[in-house]
Image (spheres, rainbow, N blue to C red):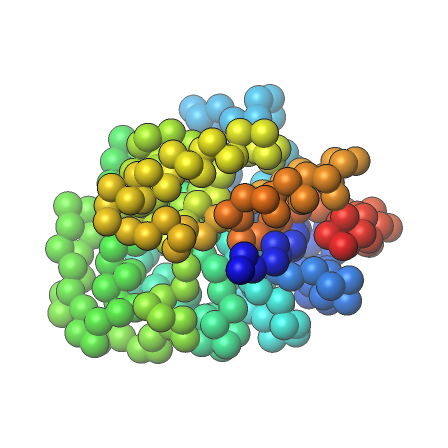
Length: 285
């Protein structure tokens, strides 16, 4: 039997919008399942990387809360699943980041979903000490190192970009072998091969993917099988923009192997955000 579709929210909150705990409590009161948040450590003032949406970078990108810190407050205040969409491990030391992720997973009782991405902003990535041309390899190595720390009593790692001498680290995550790692990336053979090789599932890139998702999931399942993995284990979380026919869109997702839909809510005050939550909750019913 297919599990029911879970519906949560995606929120790029700042100090000028609804505090994350207030929003999470309101979402929980309305029967929603989860809250996912994005990440940018900083936005360099002088950039060579164009914003993918075109034009200027939205103002909220400059003031996003730290994901793990803000989600720890949410997890302590609600029973919601907490997640990132998407975290940018390329901007973190993987040893300390693995410990922070494991700590949040343990303290939340295993309610963390780690959506990760490579990041569109090469200038941001470069400020963390790596050549943007190595971005994909760096991120994959960091995730491999983190997995070693999560799953091995004495972990070690030797890559081209990061390393770990034989080390013992606790806590281990509450979820086994670790919190689900979902890769946020574009559809296509390269992205699907990455997902099948080392991720637990996929966050499709885009806010309105319902029309193409069914075909994409079939292609992902084929890559998954080529890696000797069971396609039934693929975990898919979809980021969805608000739209008038949201209830119909959610019904369409219910006919696909989608675990969760997170609907984007505005970066605004209660007078804007809470009515948006009401609409999402009605559509989810």
